[in-house]
Length: 228
Image 1: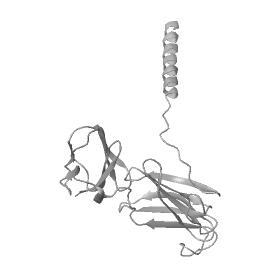
Image 2: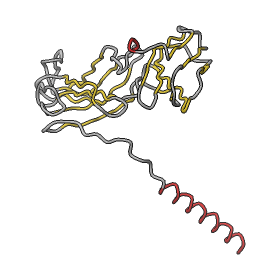
Image 3: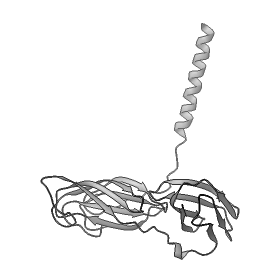
C-alpha cells in the first residue's frame, strides 16, 4: 500500500510539472490593432476570409477615425482586414435608430450574410414591425485582397478546372513559400509550409470552388481553383 501511494504521488507530481510547462509556454503576439472613432464601437464576430485576412462585424456610434460615416445612433459596422490586420475596407449599414450586427458568415457564392437586430425603419432597412426586429442582410461576393490578373506565370495550377487531382507549379521563388487552399467560406483546408520544390501534387479534393494562395516572405499570390 505504501509503495502504491509513492507511485501515485510520483505520477501526480509529473502531471503537475507537465501542466506547469505547458502553461509557461505562452504564444507570441504577432500583431495588435485598435479600430474605431471617438464614440462607442464594438466588435462582435470575426471570421477568416479566403485570402487569409479577416472580416469583423459589430456596431459603431462614431462618424470619425476609421469609420467613414454614421446613419444614426448605432449602425452595423463591417471591417475587412488583410493578413497583417490592416484595413482593406470598412462599411456602415443601417438607419437612423439602433442597428447592431451580432453574427456574420461566409456563403458558398463568396459573399456573406449578416444577422443582428434593428430599431430603424429607414435607410438600408425596409421597415420595422415594432420595437426591435431581426435584421438579416446578404452581401454580394466580396472582393478578395489579391486579384488573379495581377499574377505572373511563376504560379500555375493545372489542370484548372480539375476533377480533384491537380498540380501547383511554382517557379523562380528563391526562398521557401507557404501554400494554402481556402474554400469559399474561409476555411483553410490545406496547408504546406516551407515548400521549396517546383511542383506540388494534390489529389482527392472535393468538388467546389477554392482559392489557392502562395505566401513568400515579401509577397502573396492567389488563383481561383475549380474542382468539378
